[in-house]
Length: 402
Image (cartoon, rainbow, N blue to C red; front, side, top):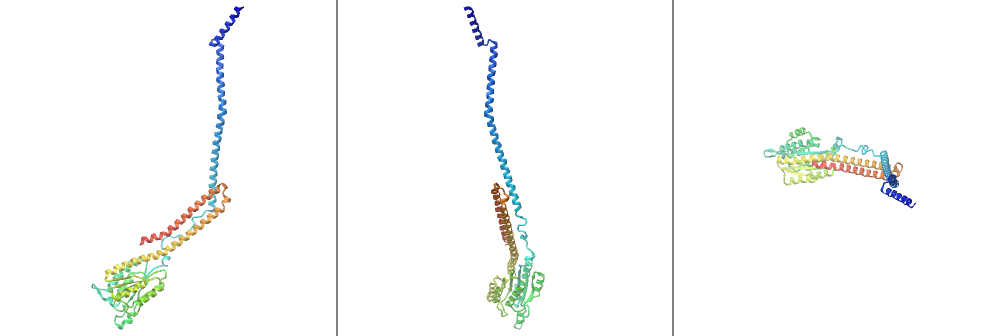
């Protein structure tokens, strides 16, 4: 019996040993199943952990992204809504720029009606007294004066100035017996009108130097012509050409002072031909009293130089008169246009602001007001710049003519 028990123990021990060494086929199978079970359990645990910790975070991230996108979309819609509301309100109250300053604009060109309102008028007083028969370098003084004067008239015909011609000393003689006839024989050889050189030249060609020198009476006649035919807005010139002093008992200096006091903007220029002493002194005083220019000439060359100065003065004066009128119209038109546009812009602003509360959403109100006042300031600034530019434009034009 002891032997049988010992044999059973030994057999069991051998089986255990074999199981430990993998010699038992059933035991191997069980081990594989155990390994697979452990791996499965591990994978299942990982899946559970992944589901618990990753997917909730992923969901939270997606939710945040969705919320951000939603906010952006909402902001975009708000901006679009604000822009639409602003444009709708502006369109309903917007200034019509095509009507801004309507009727107040000008072309910048002289118009006939305006030119007629302001002219340059010249009355030339030509000395044909006996002393003008004196010769210089073999040529009579009257012929020298005629030639120079005809050239001057030809050169100013395109200026637009009007010209009238008075002559004295061509009637009677310089004898005492003919004094009354000669002193009263002042003639309006060419009526104040547009310059027609051929007609004026024909009048000069018929003049002879014979008589006396009624300067005062000639100045008075010139004044009467200008007062009758000119206006206070015109530029009026009396141009006296003489080789002698007053010989018909008049006071030409006093007469010239009366001319200046007439209020017709009359200037008296004097050309003294081959004079000196008391004669030149009197002629200078006439020019001074007439707020004009005195010039002394000795020959035809001197005449041409003085007439060139007079020609430049007449051309500039005629331009200044016309462009002065033009400037007044331009500035007046600019002021009218500026004031009209500013008034219309202010009406636009008032209408816009009155309707902001009703037409603009509360969350858009601040933006709409900021946008509008930016527009308002820009438009007002542009209108001011345009107005200043139009005012300055005339000065630049005049400066190019100097």
